[in-house]
Image (cartoon, rainbow, N blue to C red; front, side, top):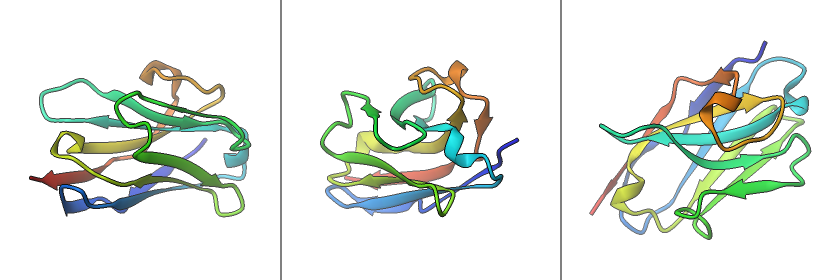
Length: 122
């Protein structure tokens, strides 16, 4: 069982930066692949980025490559999403998720946080 709690969301102007954090409970955190998804109002949840259990492998959605960076600290049971050059289209609720095997579809992930909202103003 893994419990996930996101933090770090907020309101930022276009071009600004934010760093999201996702704190996980449980001693098995380091065995899980982790990912960030986001869901904008009226839209389906979409994949943003994923990282393998060791941090050696990462995958990004094309729309965020070069602007968002996923990382993890297994000693702190935390995964991060560093976001730069934010644009209004990045506005969404951001969710972190955990899975046994890394993937890009929500169905792959067994555990989810409650989400943290990010709003980017023009």
